Length: 559
Image (tube, rainbow, N blue to C red; front, side, top):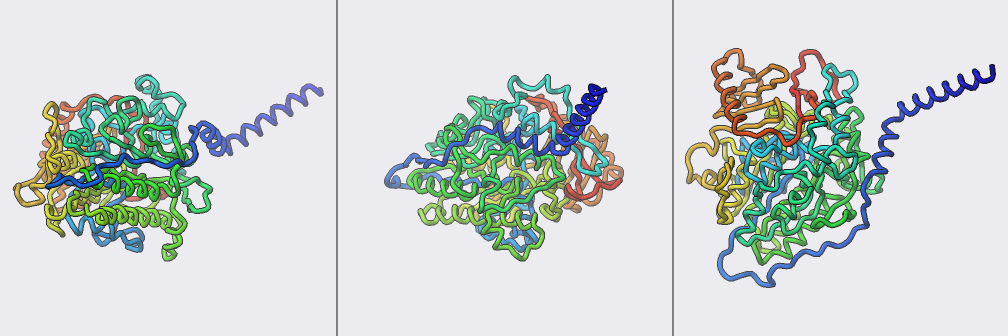
C-alpha cells in the first residue's frame, strides 16, 4: 500500500511540475535562449582608415550617404503633416532632406519586409531574380511565429515542418549562426562594389541582414569598413540598463522571441562581437561622424542602416522623459525612438556641413518597409491601409527623399512611382560608375527625371512577391493576388490612393491583364533559395493586439 502511495505522490508531483513548467514556459525558453547567446566582449575603440590629409585639386565625384531607417512608417515623420502621436514628435532633420531636395510622393520599398528590401537596394534588382525572396530567420523564430496565435485569433498561422528538409545545409541548426547561411548569392554585385571602381571608400553601419557566410558579409560584398550586426537586429541597450525604457507586446510572438534572443553587440570588419558604447543608434552615429572626418578628403559611400525603430521597443530615458504629453506608454517609447533617430540623422547632416561636404554629397533617405502592425499602434502608416508584411500601400509606400544641393532643386516633389531598386542606378550614375551589363538591372537613374530632363515615368510597372502573395502596379492600376486565399484586390491608385474601393468584380478584364503580367514576371524569377516555413495572417485595417472580427480584411504572409 505504501508503494502505491509513493507512486501516486510521484505522479502528482510530475503533473504539478509539468504544469508549472508549461505556465512558465516563456521564462524557461528565455533562460535557454540567453544561455545560447554568443560571447560579447567589452567595448573597444574602432580605428577608422584615414584618407588623404588634404583634398585633391579639382572637382571630385559626390559623396553618397544612404540612410535606411528600419520599420519607419509613412506617418512616423512630420514631413507630410503627420508624425507620431499626431505630430507630438517633430522630425525636422529627416524632413529637411525632403525639404532641401526632392520628396517622392510615390516612393516604394523593395519589399514589405526587411531583408528582401535591402537586397533590392544593394543590387538594383528584384530579389526574386536571385532567390532571396524571404527574410532570413532562425527556425525557432519561424516555429514560434508559425504556431503561436494571438489570444482569441480567428485566423491561425501555419508552420510547415515538412519543408525543413528542403532548407539549405546548416540553416536549421540551433546555433545563432545558422541563419547566416541564408544569404544573398555571392555572384550578386552590390552598389558598394560598383562605387569602389570609381575610387570610393565604402562604409557600412548597423544592420546587414543579407547573410553572414563566407562571401556574403558586408566586407566581402564591397564595403571597406563595416561596423554593425549581421543578423536582423540587436538590442539598443541591455534590457535592465538604468538608461533605457522598454515596452513589450505580450500578444506578439515576434516580440517574445526577440527579447531573450537578441544580443547587445556589434562587429567591426568581421571581428569577434563586442558591446557598443551606449544606446545603439547614438553609438552608430558617433562612429559614422568619426568616419566622415576620416574620409573628408576622398569620395566615400556611407550606408547608414540603424535598427531604429524596429522592435524591441527600447527608448533612451532622456528621449522618453522629453515626451510627457504622450500618455500611452508604448506610443511614448516608440515616439522617443523616432525622436532619437531624427536627432542622430541631424548629427550626420551637421557633420557633413562642418567638414564642408554637404554641397557635394548626395543624401538619400528612406525606410525598408512600412511600420509594423505587431507593435499595436494603428497610426504608423496613415493615411494608407496595411502594415509591414502586407503589400497594401501601408506596407510598401515609404518615406523617400534625396538631397544634393546644386543638382536637385530644393522643395521638389516628384509624383510618379519610384522604388528602392532605383537607388543603385542613381548612386552609380552620380558617381560616374559603369553599370553591370551581364544581368538585368530593374532600377533606373532617377536624376534625369528629378531634374526635368527625362519625360514620362521612370517605371510603367513595379512588382512585389513573397511566396504565393504577389503584386503588380502597372500605371495607376494595382493588383494584389493571394493565391492561398484564392483572392485578389484591384485598385485604381489615381482615384483611390488609399485603397478603399476594391474593383476586381467591376473590372474583370483588368484583373486578367494584370494576373498575366504577374505570371510573366514569375517566369523571369527563380525558385526561392529556401522555402517559406510559415504562413500567417496580417490584418489590414487594425494592428495586432486588437480583437479579430469576422469579415476583417487580412492577407497571408509567407516567410
